[in-house]
Amino acid sequence: MDFETRAIHDGQEPDPATGSVTVPIYQTSTYAQEGVGRNKGYDYSRAANPTRTALQICLASLESAEHGIAFSSGLGAVTAIMHLVNPGDRVVLIADVYGGVYRMTSQVYEPKGYLFDYLPAESFPSLADHLDERTRIVWIETPSNPMLSVVDIRAAADAAHAAGAIVVVDNTFATPYLQRPLELGADIVVHSTTKYLGGHSDVIGGFAATNDPTIAERLTFLQKSLGAVPGPFDSWLVLRGIKTLAVRMRKHCENAHVVAYWLSRQPGVQKVLYPGLPGHPGHEIAARQMRDFGGMISFLAESEDEAVALVARTKVFELAESLGGVESLIEHPARMTHASTADAPFAAPPNLVRLSVGIEAADDLIADLEGALAASAAEARATT
Ligand SMILES: *Cc1c(COP(=O)(O)O)cnc(C)c1O
Image (cartoon, rainbow, N blue to C red; front, top):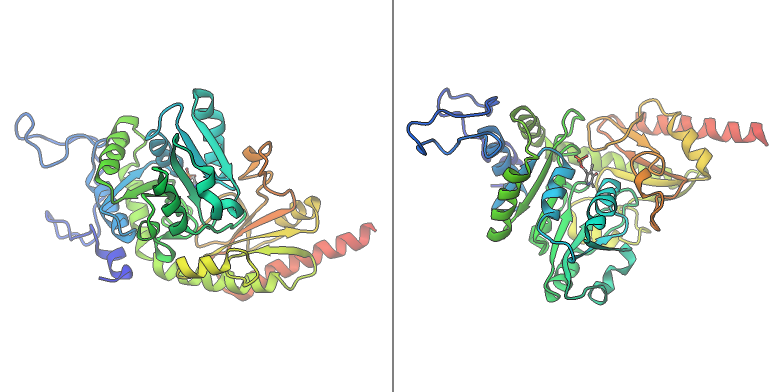
């Protein structure tokens, strides 16, 4: 069946006890057993919960995966995956990695003796030269957060596999509606379901999926053993969000396309970073491996002051961290989402502004940005 149908039905048969069409929120920590060791597949909700199971089946199906494992946050999922490697092992990450992942690798795992190298997206064509026998994981985000860099997943998987490493793709920005990394050769796909999958800025969640039975078994063990599991209600919220993922993503993409082209013609905007623009360095790869270009746009304002002032001036675009909800958001990565990369060689540019383009009317979004940019121009004139 097609993506849209699986998003609504996979893992979500009517409840056998009542016929309930939506999966019930099994708000329970434990399950009655008929005798010692005789249960219906559930014994304790950290190990398994039926609402969580429904989410795992549905989202695994959408990622073309045999196995799905849900977590309490995107970073909960990342933590579990980082436990697949040991001190002394090397992980090569895209330099422009999510700020929270960089905070984890640099401040939690590096002091324990794990080795991390950060490779700019531009260097991925020569990935093979950067791998050695200690490299266990190649970690990709594409499009990346916040620079919207694009990496060729299939080429990276070929290089990593030749060197005996596995490939993890953070697919948060694209979602499985736009891009399915496992079909392109990746070994694990990871998500912050907080973003587009939940889609309504009302839940924190994470997810990992794989077709490798050994990795699946280990991640399932780590889910239970590390304990970063989503509760039944949070699982249900993500499951509900996913039902409308396809229609939401189509509108996010449509709006972002309009906004990106409009921004690229504005004098107060130095440069627009959006893979859908033909001048973007990753445009052709994105066109090949994605269905459409997504709802995230970053752009360079004239200066840091200008960027900081601008993000506070919009009215429809709320000034807030996070992304992927129905409402449009604007933020300043260098001081907000990516402040933890300030000392890294790949710190977010100080004049960078990031937009999460929502599903409101495109005209209202343009008018909002137009008003904010015009106010900036007027202010600049007044001070010179
Ligand atoms: C938000 C985000 C994460 C972390 O997810 P949380 O749910 O906030 O823990 C990881 N990767 C990317 C690309 C993100 O945007």
